[in-house]
Image 1 (tube, rainbow, N blue to C red):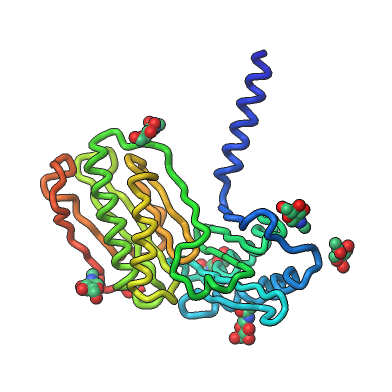
Image 2 (cartoon, rainbow, N blue to C red):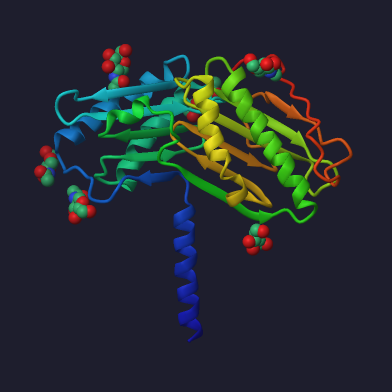
Length: 278
Ligand SMILES: *[C@@H]1O[C@H](CO)[C@@H](O)[C@H](O)[C@H]1NC(C)=O
Ligand SMILES: *[C@@H]1O[C@H](CO)[C@@H](O)[C@H](O)[C@H]1NC(C)=O
Ligand SMILES: *[C@@H]1O[C@H](CO)[C@@H](O)[C@H](O)[C@H]1NC(C)=O
Ligand SMILES: *[C@@H]1O[C@H](CO)[C@@H](O)[C@H](O)[C@H]1NC(C)=O
Ligand SMILES: *[C@@H]1O[C@H](CO)[C@@H](O)[C@H](O)[C@H]1NC(C)=O
Ligand SMILES: *[C@@H]1O[C@H](CO)[C@@H](O)[C@H](O)[C@H]1NC(C)=O
């Protein structure tokens, strides 16, 4: 009996670990698949051979491509995150992405895969190339809760994520990316860190609109949580109470005047761009 219970618990644990495993894929609709040795698979192979280096050699570490214009075309989008500066790491991440996603979403005509340094999406429907939607979204929640002044924490996280999104959309010149840090006064954690990213082909307004859509999910997903991220093909953000950033911080918020225990002050925040255009 006890052995049976332990087995069931173990299986559940393994399933949970599997569901949470990095990297994260979003596979397309079941049934919308291609077959082995099809033209679609061959076109995907051409993309896998060229897109990683095409992306890492482009100024924004971003590229789109359509292969097989007349015959079962595949459209793809690849992006390395705004704090990635190493082209080898960028192309390596995307080469791995092509391999992994074709195992994790085997024979799917549409699929997205998310890594910390890169994202890859492909589809038989080229419409997404001109769309400013987040597309194939997924989220990750750090299930640990803040216990001291959660209200103040939630407000400061929202202020930071909003300021980071503003900077990524309106103040970063080439890569539509910004990172941020905010002080937390008097709580359990000294600081909270964030980043926000769009694909660099979006206009500032499209970028901010895409981010606004996924930031609107914060109350539902992340209330009291010490960390979380929403990952989309065209826009993403993340926050944590530890630093996970690779590169300079572009947005800095001071703790709200009067400490985070004070009831909802208008955020007296100072945004310090540091003059870094990313
Ligand atoms: C394609 O999808 C259908 C329905 O989901 C499935 O029965 C079939 O095995 C799939 N084919 C391949 C090659 O994966
Ligand atoms: C696909 O091609 C490979 C290599 O040519 C071959 O071994 C395999 O049997 C083919 N599969 C199908 C389903 O045609
Ligand atoms: C990669 O870049 C080359 C050179 O610019 C271009 O000819 C080719 O079409 C691109 N291929 C893909 C899949 O992006
Ligand atoms: C770039 O990334 C590659 C692969 O991860 C690594 O081997 C190399 O040391 C990195 N180069 C620099 C300058 O960091
Ligand atoms: C964390 O907070 C959420 C929302 O208030 C609650 O549903 C959940 O049970 C809490 N989890 C833990 C581990 O305390
Ligand atoms: C960001 O851009 C906006 C709009 O162009 C501008 O008003 C603001 O001063 C800029 N902020 C920083 C920190 O550069």
